[in-house]
Image (cartoon, rainbow, N blue to C red; front, side, top):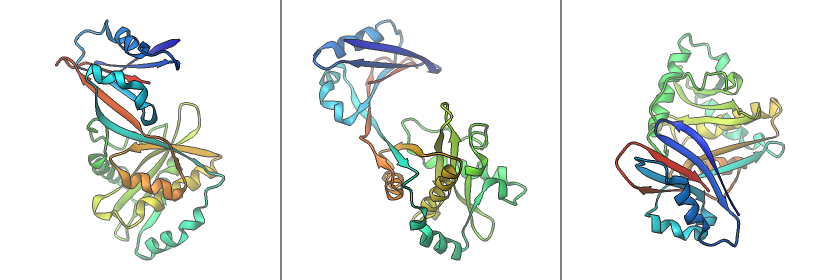
Length: 255
């Protein structure tokens, strides 16, 4: 038994597929991969994304020339078991050092949107991702899918924006975790943890019973923060890439 679903073009020159093979059918995965890609001309590379604990089942990928390119992870938190008071001491320490955690609507700065845009650009530059992130303005985290009350900004006594944490409304209506980040020179003080604590409190106040999050394996610090908060981290997802031609088209298959 096998199945395949062409998920459509999500970027210019890029196609996404979903495929799978039932247990006990050796050799089918390799043949399915050939069928999925045989009519895609001028394909520069083929990517496969699969869970690390299923890697031994996909040994045939080496025959296609696949090599590991990227790893990521996902995690979930039961908000009914979340205990924000465990972090009261951390937040008090930051407050005594002049760092306030302020919801975006309560920021008094008349130029707060410009400040937020500049902060996000700096955070984007340090983000670990499958492909380079093109720095953008603040429109996405201030867009209709993001929750203004769930956008928490760390501000020092001079009014400088040090970091942010955000919440967004997912396509299924549930609340999800958005961008979290802190300026490079401010890291190691616990600001990211404190920001996430406040945003998770907002998520619970808005009725969410659980939230999910993901990140790059190349950024162990953010994974550690989420584990401290109580997130249960699942197996890593591995993206493998096989180069083909030089034309700017690519295929990514989720297994």
